[in-house]
Image (cartoon, rainbow, N blue to C red; front, side, top):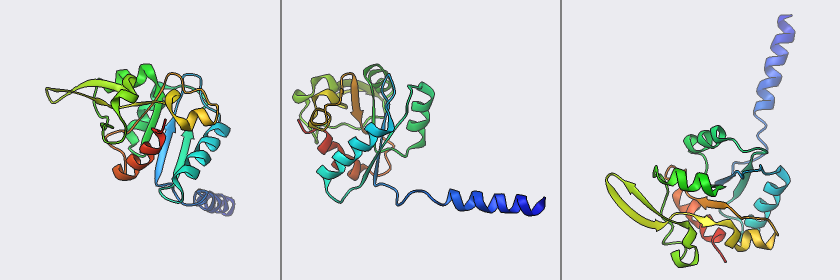
Amino acid sequence: MKRKLLIALLLLFVLAGCGGGPKADVSIFLMSANGVPNEVADKLGQSLQSKLGTAPTVKVLTTPIFSAEKLMVEIAAAENGIIIIPTQQFKALGQQGGYVPLDDLAKAEDFPDGVLEITENGKSEKHLYGIPMDKTKWFTELNFNGKDLYAFIPANAPNMEQSKQVMKQIAQK
């Protein structure tokens, strides 16, 4: 019995070590109101990587259903460089702060729907914080419906410079 338990534990450790290759430089979490299949994530990831070249590397992660709890976990985990979520959540979370201004990556007049006025530390500022996905070349070239989806960089992104580099590509019209 002990031997079987030991073999099972060793097998579990070996399988846990098989992570499927190196970790991407920028992880993109995508959650829509109706969920997103893994096949869509793969296509989006491959397309974006081909636009970026060899660096930084990206991985698009999705979930098959919408879950506010999952979204909160993903934001709190601080492992995603970019998050793409429905309009309602984008605007609601924006009022709590924690978004990185994107004014240096794209023109606010190109994406007026992504401009929010956010108050942090008693100071109110208006910036471009989100990129509406239905206006991006990335989604339209693949014939994906980006309506009601916004991409933003969370303030707790693991690598801000790489996240900005990827977001600049995403914001291409």
